[in-house]
Image 1 (cartoon, rainbow, N blue to C red):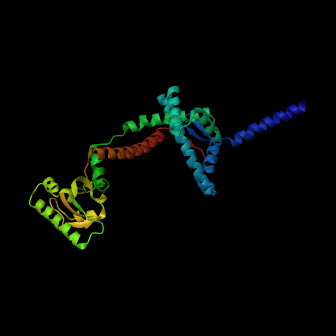
Image 2: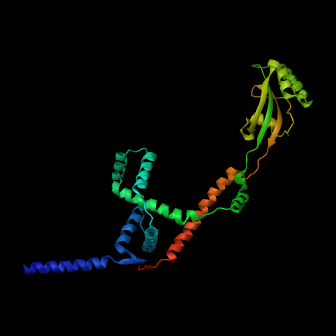
Length: 313
């Protein structure tokens, strides 16, 4: 019996020494520590999910290990800051977030639990993970987003540097009179219809109101005010007739798409860059994202500088 007890005691001491040897403190972060066990577990996960699950050289492995440790330190600093500020997530907030996930993925509560189980995660584990994400979002909103500003001067400067991205498209406001051609029209018929179109064109050039001219052609033609249209969206054959016309000008009667057409240009709006309210809002959103990323990097640096961090690898 004494021999057995002695053997057990030796095993207990050996296990204690073995654990001490394997589990070391690899970093001290203020009053918390990161152990070698935690680091190796996280490192194994990162390597397992790396692209192609490739093999790492000794140098690459050491660099990756240090990178993972620094990420863990940053995460720990975030957790400490959350605790310091007393940020919390209520059950209502957490339940609402889960309901949003179910709604976006069109899942029932049971289907979500089954999906999580298939990924090797319990529902309670998922709740805890989601709680951490919400806390991080609250922290970043408080420490970063709330301190990000975009000035009118920044919006104007961005616009001036990216005007090509905010060019409007050229538009045309047209009046049209079209004379349909008979099926298999002869050259003589086409000439006669062109002559009718030429008479209408001449009346317009002399200043006769368009509505009167259109009414005067009777059933020989159709047409009207085509309104404002995007120039590049016009049929290529029709656009060719008006491409070089200035405001007020009328093209010569031209055959296209089974009719003889005359167009009068009422208005041309060339492509231009204009800082509208809509453009300003879009630019503000871009700059807010850029400034937030910059502020987030600065905040992380400040968090690290204000902490006591001792890396021991």
